[in-house]
Amino acid sequence: MLPLILYGGSIFCQVACVVHCIRLGRNQFWIWPIVFFPVVGCLAYFVVEVLPGMQGNRHVRVMRAQAAKAIDPEREVRSARDALGLADTIANRIRLGDALAAVRRPGEAIPLYREAIDAQPLPDPRTETKLANALFENDEVDAALEIVDGIKQPTGQSERDKLSLLRARLYDHVGRQDEALAIYQDIVTRMPGEEARCRYAALLLDMGRKREALGVLEEVEDRMKRLDSYQRRADAEMYRWAIDKLKELRG
Picture (tube, rainbow, N blue to C red):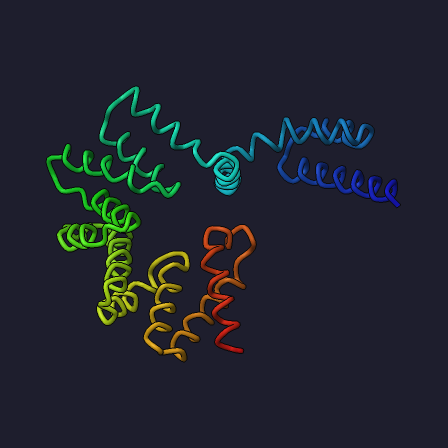
């Protein structure tokens, strides 16, 4: 059985390499080593003709970055710290703050964001939002609220929505649920990913509005079914939470 599987795999690789070669107009000299020396020929073709083209593919770069992050989550922290050691710039301080926030060390990110903001002559809503988020994650809710309420409205829609999402989370946390609900209703259809939609559903559940929450979660489920496993990976935790809640509500 095993020899048959290996033989079938070899044929598949040969056919795939030959089709790739012809369709993309590669040098057809490759067909001979692929056909007569399948293992070496296919491997050489992949290394020389296929792999270089994959380097510029966005999905390949993202997958590689995600794999590196999973294996060594502190890698970007070290790299950002080295960059700051070489050049003490505002951008490098923000980069290190982002790296620390990403590995759930908001307490270390806070002073870096503060220093970056203080060093700039004009308001920086994007970094101020990051600072407020780090404060919130560090359980400094009052300080986070004070900053959020004082941030000048960002110019870009994406940055405005990120600020609004943070504001909604803060309002929900301190019991201002009606205000948080209005914000979620405004941003839920614009923001990419499922965080806003899932947090909106969670708030509806907390307010006892199960039927509305069910409708929102069914939207999450429908959107999830339209994506492949790679696309779902970024919001994997949100999808798991949504599916578990759907099971409870339907049960």
